[in-house]
Structures are given as C-alpha cells and as structure tokens.
Image (tube, helix red, strand yellow):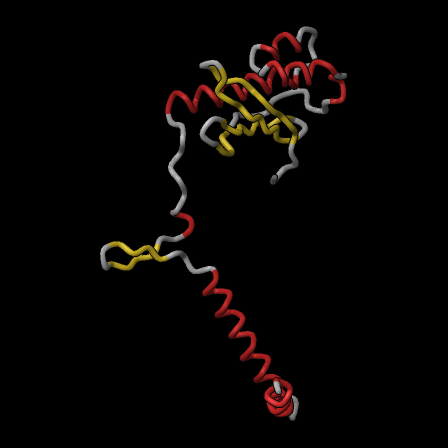
Length: 167
C-alpha cells in the first residue's frame, strides 16, 4: 500500500536530472526548516503575553557569590600550587588544602609521575553546584581541574585531574 503511494513520487523525481535536482533542493529546505524549528528557543507564557528567551540568556544564577566564591577559587589555586610542587614537603603543604581522602590518595603514590611543575596563570571558575566549585588552574602541563567542596565550614579540594586544552 505504501509502495503504491511512494512509487509515483519516485517515478516523477527520477524522470530527469532537473526533477531530481528540484527534489533534492526541496528535501534540503525541509531538513533545514525542521532543524531550525528543533533549535528554536523555548516560548514562555506569562498571563497572555508571548515572548521567547534565547538559550544563551537562560543561564541559572550563580549559586555562590562574593567572598564565598573567591575563597573557593583561592583554595583551588593554593591546592594546585602545592600539588604541582616537586619540592620536599609538598605532601604536608597539600594536606592544608585537600580533604583527607584526596591527600592520602595523592601522597600514597610516586609524585614524579606528575608532568606539571608550575602554575602558569590565574584560576577561573568552570562550574558550580550547591556544595562544590570546579576551578580551572593553568599549569605548564595543561589545565588542572580542581573540585573544591565546603567541608566543616571551610573549602577543601576533593578531586583533581589534568585536562587537555579545550576540555
């Protein structure tokens, strides 16, 4: 049954190169329109008024502001500076800024595997949730992502890993 409906369309489209080109153009326009409609911003209804909010404006408000966010970023930077240090006593310095679990994990292994030896810039916030902040710290081996959590009334690094540039 469907074959009986599609066969005349294919016969018409494949009758000549011109018809095939027209069919291909129409299909491209339909796909482009469907893609654009799928990416359209969400429409919000407010008491009879209709307006759209672009996706780039629909960002949630930051969870932390001011001194709390600055303190988290500072701890992330201080932790990264201690982490990349290859000087004697680096593990003791690291414990000041890390949770007990992370400090134990990093101190247990050989620290010479770490290719980073210096922090090369200032820290920036890459993301945040209700109880944590991800701080990106540039090092000479690539950016380090440091997850800082609020524990016992203070900020401490809970996770760290080197990332590739652009991640």
